[in-house]
Image 1: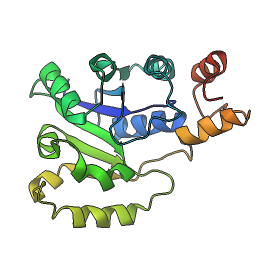
Image 2: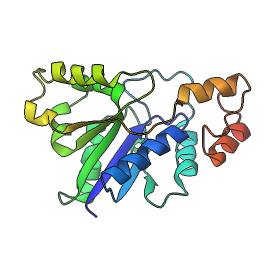
Image 3: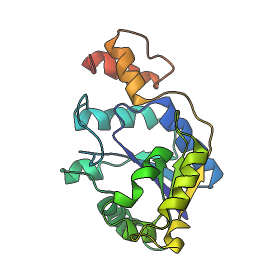
Image 4: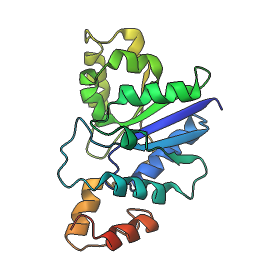
Length: 207
């Protein structure tokens, strides 16, 4: 095994946009696998309308089971508390060793907050970020912000070389949209994998 991408997020719920991004990144970087890591308690997001951690973990499994190159890790669920990327990266660095290149997939909007992340200097020494464009975010503005943020006292120019910005194929779908449509009793078919759709309805989530 040579390269692995970690894909963290609330996955509230996981949707087809997540899966498309993961597959695009996997093929472009010739990765051995992509590991989806649902967060227990995200430090940068409000927890309103957040499904139970166990439910989000189940949906992640249901949504990725048909791709042999996708895995789901419960490391942040098992740890509990706020989910900090630095702790997760230390875990996988110990698991895979220095011989495996680690990537970390984030939405390009998260690039705006990167300098506020806990131990960001250590994070960028352990992995390379792949920031992918999300609906509603101008990639040019984000790239410009990257240049401005590179003057941050927490980051050296060399570390910023470990941040890659990709304009990959994507679907105009978000977890917020899925939750809103469920609340309005609208169909979410083709927005999420079918097993995830069935689970949401069976568990009466997001109503």
